[in-house]
Amino acid sequence: MSADATARAIDAVWRIEAAAIVGAVARMVRDVGLAEELAQDALVAALEHWPVDGVPDNPAAWLMTTAKRRALDRLRHDQLRAQKHDELGADADARGDHVVPDIADAVAAAEADPIGDDVLRLIFTACHPVLSPDARIALTLKLVAGLSTEEIARAFLVPEPTLAQRIVRAKRTLSAARVPFELPPAAELAPRIGSVLEVIYAIFNEGYTATRGGDWMRPALQGEALRLGRMLAGLAPHDSEVHGLAALMELHAARAAARVDAAGRPVLLAEQDRGRWDRLLIRRGVAALRRAEAAARAARQPLGPYALQAAISACHARAPTAPQTDWVAIVALYDALLQATPSPVVALNRAVAVGMAFGPAAALEIVERLAGDDALRGYQWLPSVHADLLAKLGRGDEARAQWQRAAAWATNERERELLLQRAQR
Image (cartoon, rainbow, N blue to C red):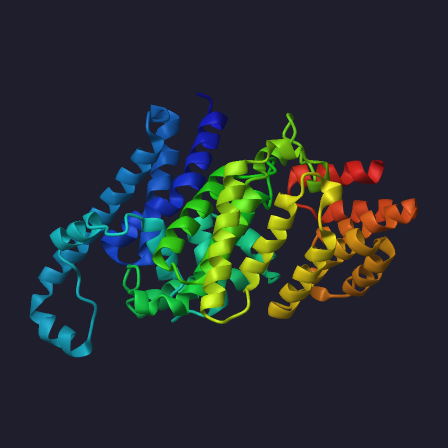
């Protein structure tokens, strides 16, 4: 295998397996920041050995085994250091210093896994209330979704150095607070659920439309987010928003096969072959939406943002063809969503629905007001929606300019190609 092919193989395996490796090691060393460092050590070892020895038959297992060996080495080192300083034990107890776990205890803890999932445990640990909401999401996207600091900074609309410092501080805070690497008891789930849902959906979105690169989607991330969402629904069966997120992801994932053509090029929703939509995932999504609605009624609460978005997606899923979509109902759902979670992105999506339900002129007024919102600066779908409405109104030159602007803002290669093609038309 060539050096380039080996490098691509390492990158691919790492993107898929990094979260599981960090989670498994964190259960051993009980420190998320240290676990990430040890997992990175395993990656460095792969970069050193695989080009010489070849890619192993089971590269994921090789990385996992190497990372766990690094963890055991670190535990032995820490235990030896602790033994050499036994005479200082009384002082350490008085100061409340960290007590190094026995290696046998650490390995036993790592083998005992009642929920059977290190990744979900990792998400709940990184979403501990000791961190600010922004820090929770940034750290988890780095550890679980494998996004770069640059990609997360772009999503947060903050400078990259600011985001990098936020992640570093988050890891230090978790370590200093001695946050246990565990799934919290049922009574303590509620304070973290919101952040956990946000992170899982962010992972799904990165899989649904990749931030950058040559692929329109990252199916492995979609699958992981779906798995985590289903598991979370089992842990919190009475939470409407947990079921709402599960429904939303199932319904979106149902379109995956129709979202690209044979050459891997994006296919927009209105042009998709609905016969290729996954009917099983649609049934699962609709069933989850019903559970979300039932849980909301039982709690005497309105539907939350995820359930509302799932209801919007269900409108698309129920329409046999694109022209038969109930856009008036979708506008009403977006009205409720905008009240539940005011956001310029939600307002932009609502404008698309308004354009379909009441005509492009009505939508254009909304989009032109949003054009001045700093939060949408660099967001490629703003000029793209603007261009689509201008084209429908016969203002071709203006539309072309907006599509070119959208293409300049796009970081995914497939997305950029799509926008440039629309500009050329």
